[in-house]
Image (tube, rainbow, N blue to C red):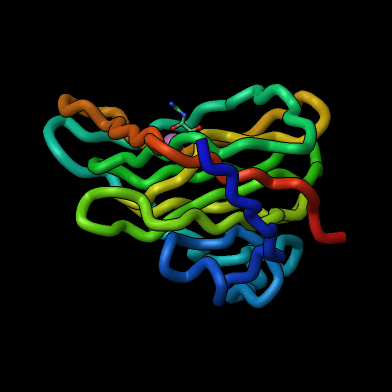
Length: 168
Ligand SMILES: NC(=O)N[C@@H](O)C(=O)O
Ligand code: NI
């Protein structure tokens, strides 16, 4: 089994643009509402629900904390809907995505999401299942229910991508 180190990049809207949206107030369209008592950070993510009897789900995922080194041995994607993860405990988490190459994930890219950042994977975007860091953490998850099976997985046959360190 070939082990390839995978560096972790800071999460920014620009760097993440081809995979989905970054859910954060920084740089968002801000609207003052409710007679000036509330700030609305508007339209942060493109939620997609496709296929038969499709509807939006709001869930909470309680993810166990992963410790370094973290091995990426597989990726998954959801052909019929987007999937958003917003941290509820204000802790950083790991986001691993990949471009598609003829129906398979290309070399993954890893990002460190800060505790005030969420992500929304657009439909069919390869990503690794939830990776909370060090401690169990809760995430608000917005994704899709519907008739068609919405999970496609890909296991790397001959390699593992290993995350050895995180940026500060
Ligand atoms: N299976 C499931 O609902 N979770 C994954 O899709 C994930 O991305 O964590
Ligand atoms: Ni997923």
